[in-house]
Image: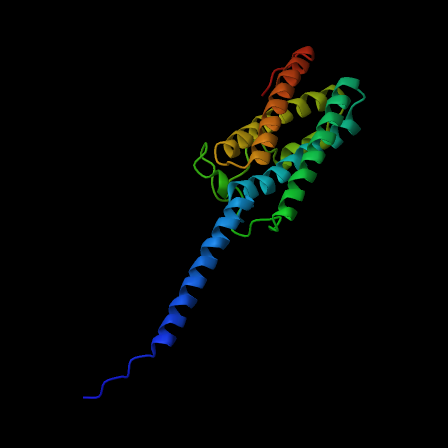
Length: 207
């Protein structure tokens, strides 16, 4: 029976050292990635940035519509505040995705990051979003009818947005994401109270 000659000792040492170097490199890369704090493509931070940008975009759209459908100074000012605040936040979240080198859309489906929160999950409708029919109704309304419809739709929209902000705060340890989510939730809940008062002034209640 033939016996395979043993590998020279020097070669065995070289192989062992190569394995150790590769292992150390992998550990270093993992530690560096963890320390960088850069979220992954499937993380809640990226999902929130993508989905909340879409959510905000509809609020901006509704605000532009109502500014064309009413002359009421208070409603127009509220709409202007929503436009400027939420467009700025969209810009911030888009910049995060660029910084993290992540895609602007999730090919695996929206709302994955919020799975298990209030029945939301992959492909679910974002909370508080107006339907196409409601948007069409807003575009056709004018005066007080447009104001009331806008306020009702925006209250529901803000409630959904605050819920999304609360969800990401419970899922992330990323400081910038937590700070923005906290600011969003507080600001939108403050505007919900304001819009409720504006509806009462018009003899209407939130739907």
